[in-house]
Length: 168
Image (cartoon, rainbow, N blue to C red; front, side, top):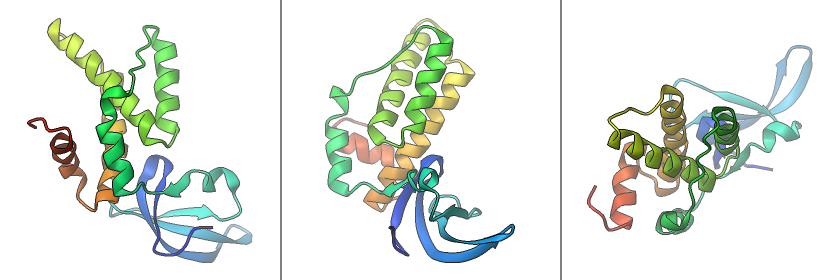
């Protein structure tokens, strides 16, 4: 069980703080809920039923600074996963986004950035769907890294570059 004031990552919502564990009535029944406040989305609150294993499974502790640094240092060894078939690519990218794992997000980001570079070399832009996947994967990864490092998501790119000893 998670605790009040714990910083967690919740599926596609990113980093959240557990504001409280409250008994609430939604409909006819009274249940206990985790009340989550997304850290980087000020206007929303998420209610997760404590007794719903599928939704609680989307909750996990935020990575530590050391885990983030290990992921960054090992980024070059993480493979890409481009699929030529659009339907297979969509299924693969959806699975990577839903995995709730930073390594999967890095695979997706690396894959799409490599494809973007190939398209730009041919004078073409990234397809809108691929651009959407890239933005969402970056948002989730940068939120997680920012939560672990206690910085803002906009500062994550520079942090990664400094750890890789490359100019930004």
